[in-house]
Length: 132
Image (cartoon, rainbow, N blue to C red):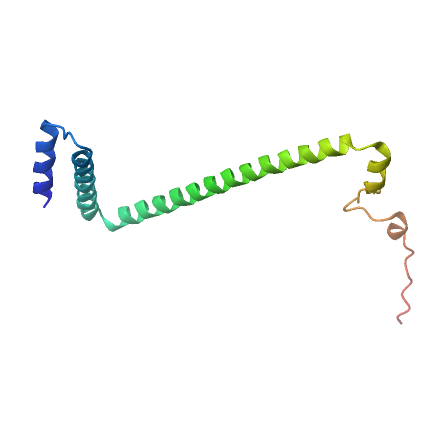
């Protein structure tokens, strides 16, 4: 089968097909030949190399999936930025009296200090032991 495809490919390579169907058939034959060659080479490889190839293919697929997720998230961020800009424009166009009633007040909060105790907790009186 491989020899027949190779012979057909060589014959077709000498004179290019004139129709679209002929070109498609040539492309399909070339792809089948390349596929046959890949499978032939894979059959000659040791199992550990095949495992390594499978691992690389898995990582490449994972990377492609991650890139697609990044593209989706980038599109979402751009859409949200556009929406935010539109909302800011609408808020700037409102009269001052109307926009002041719709604003939500924000409380000022002191940041927590992690790792430090309150002064009273550090200077707690020591209890005397009453054990006899």
